[in-house]
Image 1 (cartoon, rainbow over the protein chains, first blue to last red):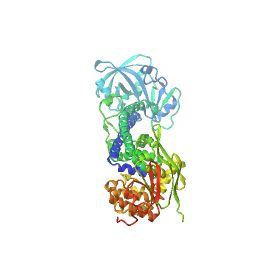
Image 2: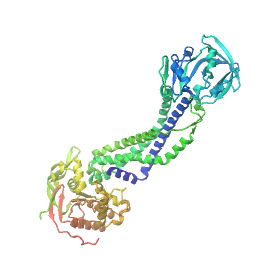
Image 3: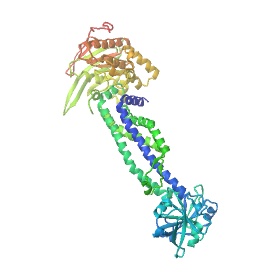
Image 4: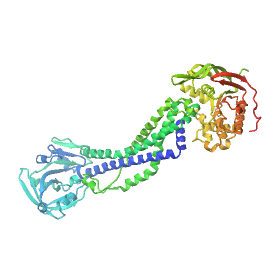
Amino acid sequence: MIIPKLAIRNLLGAGIRTWLNVIVLSLSYVVIIWTQGLYQGMNEQISRAKIDSEIGGGQFWQENYDPYNPLCLDEAHSVMPPEIKKLIRKKQAVPILVVQGSIYPGGKVLPVVLKGIDPSQTILNIPTQYLLDSSEEITAIIGTRMAKMARLKEGDYVTVQWRDVDGTFDAREIKIAKIFQTQVQTIDNNQLWLSLPVLQKLTGMHDQATLVVISPELQNVPSTAGWKFQSTEVLLADLAELVKTKSVGASIFYLVLLFLAMLAIFDTQVLSIFRRRKEMGTLMALGMTRAQIIQLFTLEGATHSILAALVAAIYGIPLLVYSAKSGLAMPQSYDSYGLALGDKLFPVYSTGLVIGTTLLIFVITTIVSYLPTRKIAKLKPTDALRGKYL
Amino acid sequence: MEKKLLVQLKSLTKRYPMGEKEFPALKNISLEIKEGEFVGIVGPSGSGKTTLLNIIGTLDVPTEGQVIVLGKDVSKLSGKEAADIRNKYIGFIFQTFNLLPVYTVFENVEFPLLLQKVPASERKKRVMEALEWVRLSDKAKSKPAQLSGGECQRVAVARAMVKRPALVLADEPTANLDAENSHNILQTMVELNQMLKTTFIFATHDEKVIQYLRRKISLFDGKLAKDEVVEPVYKAGERKL
């Protein structure tokens, strides 16, 4: 325990030089944790929104369904297997029928995706209750982005055209019953939500669906022939990849900061070894071995990271807690990036992130501190006492 | 009673490489130093005093010959063994004091005991005792930068003595001190030599130090010129501190 005690004593004794390094390094801690917390928060926030409004606890896909291929939709519908129907009856799943169509707002044609959903469903956070219209007219709900693009308002009527199961074109006037706000663009852009029974009837696809969203509470997902189950992990993989890419981009910023902090510590170590040669000689004369002196100098450098963690905790915790509670206002442009972020982004700082960052900085600092001390291994006590450089 | 042999040099030669040639710093030196001696290695600059002191202090090794310190052959010691001997049995006093600048007086004196893993309460007792020997108890919390040269050297003496070593090696201990402080330090060392039976070996060419020696080993050009028992001009307590 003597080496750590001496390292701390030496470090604190060095005064302002130590504290300058510590402050720069503590900034690295806070910035790394903050930026990573932002991306972790972004990932969690978007995932939560998508689970709430789009993917639920996973989806069964009709075997021909491919969300990235709109041409598949003509074939991507069939009668659901009994296992899935059982879940639907228990309100543990909600079927969605996806059909291509067009609308003609203001005399212009706009390709859309018609989605039929059970109006009484409670699994997805979509106001499908507005589809429960007892009148004879067909009602639809759309998101704010779609409404803005098509210049539609609640109560407006718009012509919808589609092809039925036999490929025959048909068209009707539908009423926009509700314009809803959602963070998730993929249930909004170019989409028109209708009542499932209505869409099934209009297209002649009785009892058929394209995909079935299951409840997040459902523990055991049954296996079904022809309908492939896509877990939430699979459905969120693209998002995770996107956030990861953004996170790597952001890491350049804090890597530069970390590099500067490490440069300062490396410089301090080199200078320290240069200036304290006589001290090293004295330590050897007093009975320390070269290995102990290397340990001492390395630990002095590494202790910067421990002090920095403490300093970072003093000003960083209030800052990070404040940003986690009040969130970060997101610019409108983020919505156009396709990220379901909402108005505010709330950073999430996990224990893993904090411990991981602390360990990462400690390890890097220790390595950077050790590198210059290797020269001490070649130092002769008599040369050191004379102040002779290595 | 026969006094214990602490240092034994047998045909010691030390050469330093100097380009392609070798520079002989010590040539064929043989001598013995016993427990409780107050001995000085004297000679002009470049005569090999410090080299000899360093070899006795296990900080360096001979090129030829044998050096036995406290029963151990210096040439055969590993780095760790040599460090262990220095830590337990040898105290060093340097011309430039070599105090650790960021430590207080107390911490500087405490350092050798920390390396020996002496318990805290025992450490405190021994450090305060050592500071009393050098009359610096009131400066325990001061930093070296706040002390005069004489006080710094007294701290160095306390640091060398705190572990009660068998041997203290002092390299030009008075070179940076005025006459008054030099005599103070030397008086302290004479007293400690008599009180604790510690062997003191000086490397010096300072006449003030020579006045206190009981044995004078003269080196010239790396060779042993003279080894004589001398009557000290000053003895313990003869000069007021």
